[in-house]
View 1 (tube, rainbow, N blue to C red):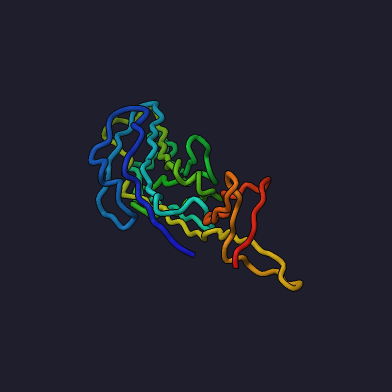
View 2 (tube, one colour):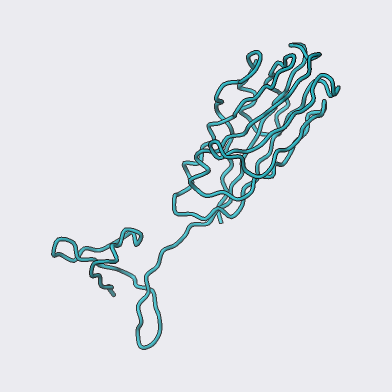
Length: 203
């Protein structure tokens, strides 16, 4: 098993009122005490996708055995007629994963999101969506605060092995050769074997 933790490093831009301030403060983990601030607005839904999670160190031929997504944030008012909703959710591109987590609190807290299961390919499209909905009494003096987030992935590599029968017992081949253009060529990546053609094992 191996583990990789990735942080956000970008965003797709904010929908709704206003521009975030100190947005780089959101590109840290959940131990941070600094925050990015997103202004709220009257009768508005405000959302932002955090992106740029780097999983390039995870090979393609792996099985994702676990994924933990943590988010630290709060809002500056929990009065229902000002901020009626504040949620965060993980996405694989445009597909919501797991379920949304409510963070309607004025105390900065760390939340562990429900994110369901993921494939290796989905990791490269991972986004975290922060959403707030405001009433007609909200104003730019109220904010969503994002302190940071992290995604921790555990995985195991899928080892491809070819076996042959030797004296009634199946044993792994140490080398495999495949005929290419009339010549026997050693295959180092078993996933590339064309099983419609002849191949032989090596000792």
